[in-house]
Length: 158
Image (cartoon, rainbow, N blue to C red; front, side, top):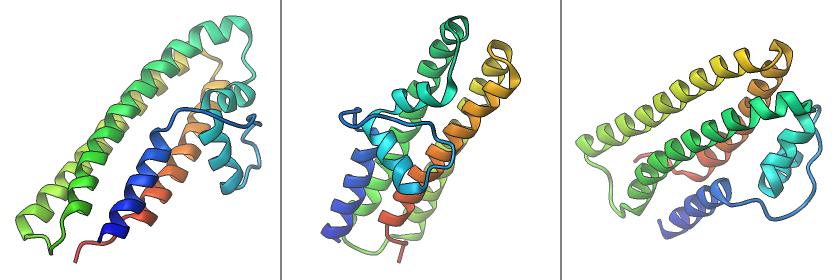
C-alpha cells in the first residue's frame, strides 16, 4: 500500500508542480508524452505558443486564464485530499467511507465543470470564437492527460 501511496503522491505532485524546464511547442499533433513534458516544463509557455494571441487578445485572455487556473488548483486540492486519505488507508474501506470518497470525488469534478463553464463563457466574450475554442480544446487535452495519470496511479477500492 505504501508503494501505491508513493505513486499517487508523485503523480499529484507532478500535476501541481511549478514549471521548471524545457521550451513549449504548440499542442497541435502532440503525442501524450510530448504534451506531458510541455505541461510539466511550462504550461503557460505551451499556452502562449499554442494560442498565438495579439497584444489586445492577450490583455483579455491572461486574467481569465489565471482565474481558471486558480479554480483548477482548488479542484485539484479537493481531489488530492480525498485521494490521499484513500491511499493512506491500510485496510479495506467501509461502505460508508467508500460512499463518502465517491461523493467527494464527484463534488471535485462538479466544481471543475462549473469553473470550466465560467471560463468558457468569459473566453467566448473576450476572444474570437476560434481562438476561445482552441484554448478550451488545449485545456481539455491537458486535463485528460492529467486525469489519465491520476487514474493510472490510484488503486481500485477493494
